Picture 1 (spheres, rainbow, N blue to C red):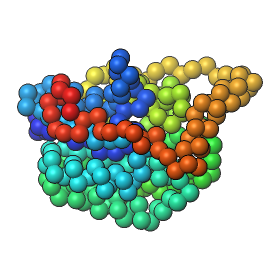
Picture 2: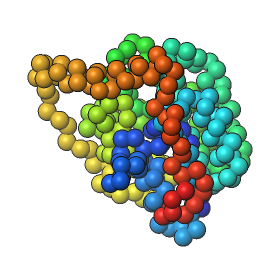
Picture 3: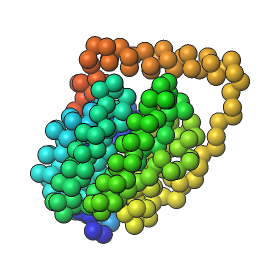
Length: 256
């Protein structure tokens, strides 16, 4: 197998929320991909630099230079989702910088994996604002991937991600089933066989009655939306006290 090292760069999507290990730490699609790649390469090494809540400029400034310095064979780059949710979202600047980052990563000789994000707007408020912004970001990712020969994982085109079972309680982060499906897509793009069960669509939940659905919305708003708004108002991030779970390249079975 070609890849002896893999560095994952990004935010909560790549850190692995909401797919917990038994100890409460997060696994996620990148760990699943790394575990599969390690099967065929005894010398395989893996780093995951992703931290929840990170905005695109922070990912670029903090994680990309570290990833470049490691000179891995494979890099995943997924960022911009948190920026789409901010009033300060600047699509032109983000698109330009996204292209520059992928060009830099490809310039090291690494294979690069990028993502068109799945549609989360049906489960979140502000769809009329978030939807067009996400479309701009996804379009830029697709164009960049084609321009630089990166592996494009098109989650937006996969209708299974419209199944609520694919998402965690906060409706923004993937569930374990969602992460497994992402890992299957990534490995397929790399030409590596994955666990076929990861791509079996889970059963959809039965539709809730109107009152039950509104009650669920109210619970969600109290548990997840209100804390998110409070962090925005106070200038805080969910990742302020979080460090990368695997900051250095190391064998997959070792803690980085």
